[in-house]
Length: 162
Image (cartoon, rainbow, N blue to C red; front, side):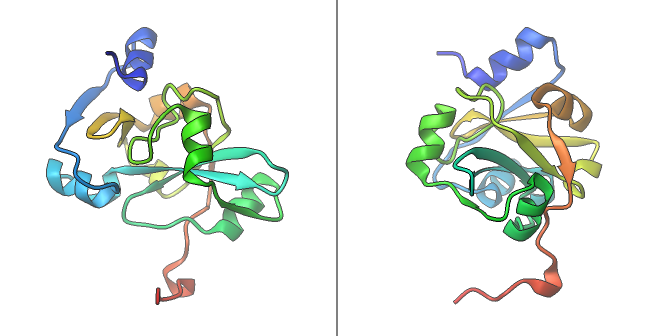
């Protein structure tokens, strides 16, 4: 069975490299560690629900977190919150741990963190657990129609988890 994200890249003739690892838990850190990549090169594909009932993707480097306040401001919403896993899976057609805007069942608006966007190449989930693709950031942005904005949680304002 073809992985939709990879098929989209092939159909569009976009240069990419497929990276496969043994998936045993979700998250960019285990993926980056398994592939020997810097955590900042592997992108989180997170689905958020907006105050208007819509959904969107936020793409963030694996070594950073999304500021919901900044994401809301960048998208013109008073509030945004992480989508329930069942909603994200229903909308994208992908399981948690394999979410991707590449080949998503429903095209959602995509916001790419501006600091993450400065990297020349990014590694993003291809739409299956344990399968990532590395491609030029400019190709990713053009393919998914991503908007670029400052959505990164500042280290200074980060609250410790309890």
